[in-house]
Picture (cartoon, rainbow over the protein chains, first blue to last red):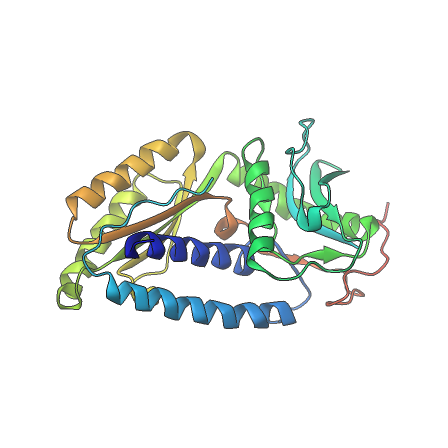
Length: 70
Length: 218
């Protein structure tokens, strides 16, 4: 997998995490409440962000193909 | 215990022909003017994994193809059907407003990255022009720029399905015009960013074990 497609895949996963875990209708009594799942996800999210940032630094100048979710 | 994927307007259409979390069947619970799409959790909660995230997303996307779909956050469990009925009854007005507002809409994500740190200032100006240009073509947006995760632009756009190709083509033209920048476009996604996010639990419910026994009044 070349750098561009790897970056596109990681960004797609990042966007998935952002939406599925951090947005959408949520059941809660307390807007500030946190579940164990969310704590775990936040850790994974930080790792992904670091990964994406690293790839971004490496891929300067690469043209990224649009990623279509289907 | 049941797992909730999405709320949709009441529909006579069959559910997507696919399995849900834990390979469980999808079910539709008709609750007043809406449907709740669920799976049964026979062996407890489903583990948090990338594959399960994609299953959740796949179910919601499949629904989105045939009906207005309000996506529910991953990991939403209720103790039983009565709890779900109670929950929806308490929030029905909000849900119906969202159903009308988001009918026929999807969202697109766009990140614009600079080609080099030296050109960051120029890139920010370009990103602003890109964002404004896209705004003219979409129903709404959330702009988290500049600088989110190092991007010049991190835009989230609400787009009518019947204008999706037009908007994607517009972004393609912008990419050609601003050839020094890198565009990363994802979607179409269900409108996760545009639903009214909070559905409140009944006062006597518990947070981590799902909702207790509640019966819809009246």
